[in-house]
Image (cartoon, rainbow over all chains, first blue to last red; front, side, top):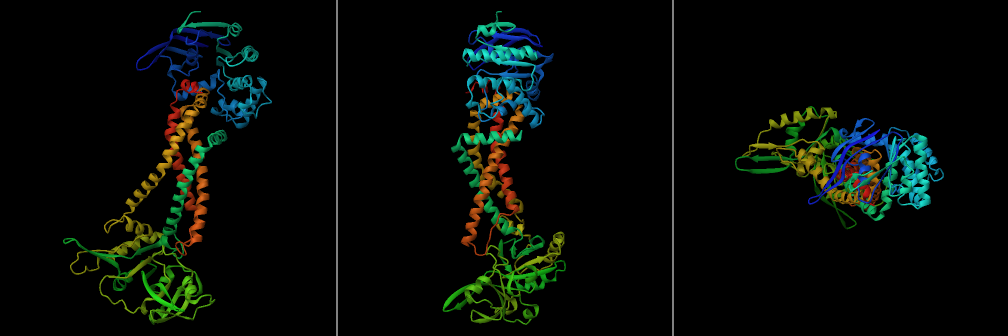
Length: 221
Length: 411
């Protein structure tokens, strides 16, 4: 489903050139739950951002569903992300000025859905993550675990084929982390969603189908 | 989607109340000044009491003669001779009104001197202008032809001369030792309407000076009333043809006596010359002045908006991640900004209403009543939109250029 070939990412400033990703090739199958691990600064999040089309590689190609994403313009890229991808961030990145329901509806605003359709889908997603009683709350009124569940609901509301999770349990205690992990595993098992997760946690990583290890920008496992 | 943008816009405004206050104050204050000025100009230039036929009127009140070789210029209002010999021969106008400007006389009441501004007019003057007669009527052609000493006075003059007397038609008013019989009392005209303002109106035939000068220059102005607005070009063409046949004064080789619409007249006074009406120049200068006046609050709002964008980097990054294109984000931000400026506009309208109320109450210019009509409100709304776009475009462009990954890193 996802094919990365010879991906390289170099960050350049006036004085320094940093090789963040060094010649990584990777195939990810449909329905796979993949973990990416490695020490801090090894390029895990950079790789995830490249797969999620949030960043461009300096070299190499990415194909998702046989589509070469390097040919996309801004509009096509945005549409592709909206239709195919969902994101879960370590810091949740919820919009504090909007209620939970409005946060979850966000991806649907960029589709041609009616207000009722958006509301129904968002409610369904929140029910799936066990937050149907928090629709009118604001993110600041929720615990960390609840916020992350809202973020998961936002990621799945548009029924994307692929979810990219960047340390989704990184800011949570172990109990809440396990709850979140359960939700992700169920999504993968029941809905067949392909999930790519960056994590520091070995226990979480071993619950997934495959583990990829990075070190200094290169794949070592 | 608009409802979502509206919610976000209000939430962002409430987040930093002080900055919001500064923004709204700047917008509303600027708009108050612009709308009050528009209300004033609307009163001067749009059909208003008693000049309701402005849209089919041409005004001619000045004659200029030049010696192009020696550079001599002489200019003044028109003489009665010029009007009677030349202008009165025109066939196209439905009516031709003529009147004098700015002459004063003294009246004495209870040992108190009242200085009044009087106007000599012809009979057609009362057909062209639509005065509100509170009492009586205008003097007739017959009274004019007979040089009867009759007069129409303003409500203000009635109060000043006759006090609380209810009916004054038939009574006499003494001006510069001459008695005139009052035949009518009219609602006052604001001084801003130079052509029709007067405290006292008299038939021109009772003038002591008789206005028998032979030259082109004197103390009169003219309103040419066309049958319809569409007929104005034909009236103007006939007037120009007539003018071309007027012989030049001795030692002068050029003659100018323009018949302008109210806009052209206004523009010529401020920006024009005898050779050009200055209308185009006026439009450019007014537009630039408005834009310059809007510039300061715009720059202020641009700065505040750019700061807000940095604060909202995370939100922008999330929106981009979940499918908002740069174009969509620019649109969102412009909508949010226009909501802010419309809020400022509503405040501006309220403030304008208050300012106009106090202006009207103060009688700064007697009989001048300003109002916020559809024209003024449309101008205000238009300015809000321009302002919203001007102050939103640059920050929106900056927002759309934010790299998603960098934006998401900002806490």
